[in-house]
Length: 138
Image (cartoon, rainbow, N blue to C red):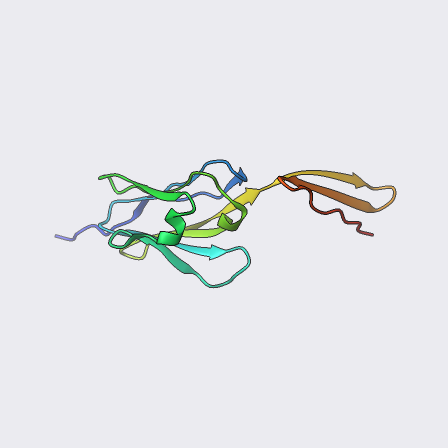
């Protein structure tokens, strides 16, 4: 008799949200353990951010990030108010090594005007601080 190996039943999907909105990356397994890893958009090193035994890294708990768990193997990563620094690639992996990665994009509010006749790209970024930048591209 051969035992079935663990597998991811629900895999995270690429997700884009506005800054301050709620975001959820879904992951479920039929195995006994699961963990999440994170790679920031401006770094190449991957960090463990959650496993069942140790829970969520304390620095993430302070940032309104939590893990929604149940007895059916779900370990959904929940961002109550996603921020720009939450953007990156998140990898869900079960105890047998089955893994799936998805990115979380966190967008600010912006307006963009493109003038083809003049080959000018003007970008106005708006946020809490008002206008943040304007550039010209030839």
